[in-house]
Amino acid sequence: MSNPLIIGSYATIALLWGLSQVVLVPYVVHLLVLVTVILYAACHQSLVLREEIPKEGEEGYDPDASRETMKAEDAYQFPLVGSMSLFGLYVAIKYLGKEWVNYLIGAYFGLVGCGAVTLTLSPLVAKFLPASTNEKKMGFKKKIEHPLPDWILPSPLTVGFEFTMADLIAFVGGAGVLFGYFQAKHWTLNNIIGICFCLQGIQNFSLGTYKIGAILLVGLFFYDIFWVFGTDVMVTVAKNIDGPIKLLFPRSLIPNEETGKIELSLLGLGDIVIPGFFLALLLRFDAHQAKMPTKNIDINASFPKPYFHSAMIAYFMGLGTTLFVMIQFKAAQPALLYLVPACLGSSLLCAFSRGEFKELMAYSEEEEEEEEKKEEEQAKKDD
Image (tube, rainbow, N blue to C red; front, side):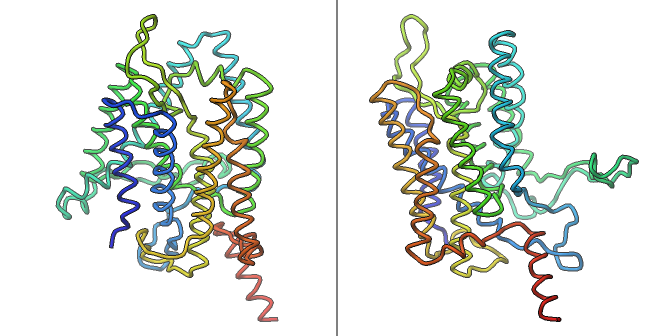
């Protein structure tokens, strides 16, 4: 049975995208509603990350199967790496000119965005094709041995790709969106790519543990404050980069007489994706606490979601506060200044009120760590 809220979320995304081109949707409403439904849909899609990966000898085993999971050291380094990248873009804009920077950034994110659009559209396209067509895969895969050490490049290295007819049709659609974006740089095409970035990023990436998520959020909390309030770097980069790294919301449908462009507000994808990783982790923790199965996962299944719902409400209020302060003081605001306390505070409050603080801290999606714990426990029992 389908979850009407998930279907409604995707329908709202499509409706807002189409409606906002012909009707002026108040940009505050547009932003709050669009971001909320993106998060709801993507977080529920991320439930598949709870699926147990078949081990060697088990049915469905794939030696190349893996999941993208953040490690603690990655969380510590993320604000530093982000700062270096941000400042590098700032310097490039100042001394090389935004045209060259936009060409390189646009090309990179455009190609990656084409992949995101393809992955997003493929399941939809597959619903309209015969099942036999979707089961047949094209392409190739080959393992290549090489003399390089594993820390540089794993050996054997798997090269090649496989795709279905649905993937191919979706790719053509994604390439069309990318071509149209580079031709017109229209905000609607930018948003298609940006929305697909958000959906694919959140549903395919795991923070690993609550602690790692907290480390990442706290680090980026100070990162955002420093680069927005302490310097003009963040605002300069955001305003000068034309790549699909933000969502755009029209404040008027009538072009400005001087510039010939409509006035737009923006929200960086990081303010959606980073908290989205955390919200998705909380939803999977809810599923874990409800003892939902880890095989043949149904994202539409109903179960109590206290952590996810409380964090979603807190995120919505935090984003609303960001917009209120921005409008009130007519100055750019670091969204994570409000979103990080909202997400962390709501989840901790929920844990304490339910007496599940230890369970929340102990929850882990790191496969190696979980296996080591099981081995240690078994060794103690044997002793």
